[in-house]
Each structure stands twice: as structure tokens, then as C-alpha cells.
Amino acid sequence: LPTDDDTSSSGGESSSEDLMAVEETMNRTLDGKVWLRMVKDAQRRHDAQKAREILDIALQRLPTDPSLLLASAKLERTRHHYESARKLFRRCSECHPEFVANYITWSAMEVRLSRPESARAVLLDGLDNVASKKSAFARLTHVLAALERSEGRERSARDALLRGLKMDSVNPFLNQALAVLEYDSGNVSRAQELLGVATRA
Image (cartoon, rainbow, N blue to C red):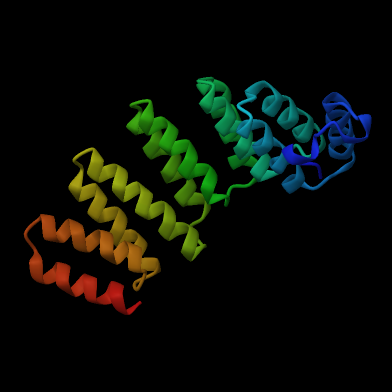
């Protein structure tokens, strides 16, 4: 595929002709990664409108591709179209309920909008959907615990981490997070024990 460096005027070809060639290639492909590369190129040029157009075309051809849905939601978030972003995040979670990155990105948006309850609901929904997936469950548990701590909900944070450790008792990130929580609560010996597990994992 052409890059910015390929769009010179050599051979008498105009930049608009190059762009048409790129779009023709895009229209033929069913590879989501190719579409995402073109979106990133548009974003590097600070052309949000072109990025939006590319994603709209891509989603017509690949309406359930998780990476395209997430990229589209993130673009809407960047443009401050938060309700549109939520619709896309929701659509992604419905099509791909085990796609962890969607829940993490969605919840982060809600946190930035000072909507911690919404963020918590997103993460809890994600945890329900990945309950049998050890790695995914641990990632979402870690994010949920961080949210709870940021809201001063130490007990809820501890409960979340303990729930995650029931599934993956040697997960280094969960053990380390719980160690920090215990240390901050004055339980130094317990914190040292947990750090020992984390470093051995």
C-alpha cells in the first residue's frame, strides 16, 4: 500500500489519483488490519474526517470486526461524540463479548467524563463475559480494582483483587496490586508475602 512517501508527483500522478488508487485497494480488501493502517495514516495527517470516512466504509464491509468497532469508538471519543462512542463500544461488546480492550477503553472514557458508576458497570459486565478466561478476567479485575481505589473504595478494591486471585492465584499484577493495598493499610508482612508471590510468578 502507498505511504505518505509514495505520493510524490513522479510519473505525473497527482496526489488525488494516488488517493483514489488507495481507496480502490481498500474497497477490495476484507482485511481489517489494512483498513486500520489507513485510518492511522489519516490520523497522523490530523485528518479526522478522512479517518471517519475510512472507518464508515470499512464497517460497511466488516460490520462486526472488533478492532474496527473499537477504532471507530475511539475516534468518536476523540471528537467528543460520546454517545456515538458508547453505541459503538456497546455494539462491539455485543458482537465480541470477550474482547477485553473494548471494556478497558470504554471504562476509561467514562472515568474521564467523571462517570465512575458507568465505568464500574462496564467493567463488571466485561467480567461476567470473560468469567472463564483467566488472563482476560485478571486484566479487567486489575482495572476495576484501580478504579475502586481511585474512588476511595478500598474494601471493594480488595474484594475485586481477591476475586481475581481465586481464578489466578499467582498472577503477578494482581498480587502486586493487592500488596500495595495491604502496605498502604499497614499490613506490611502481608504485603511482603504478596510481593514474594508476584516476583516468583
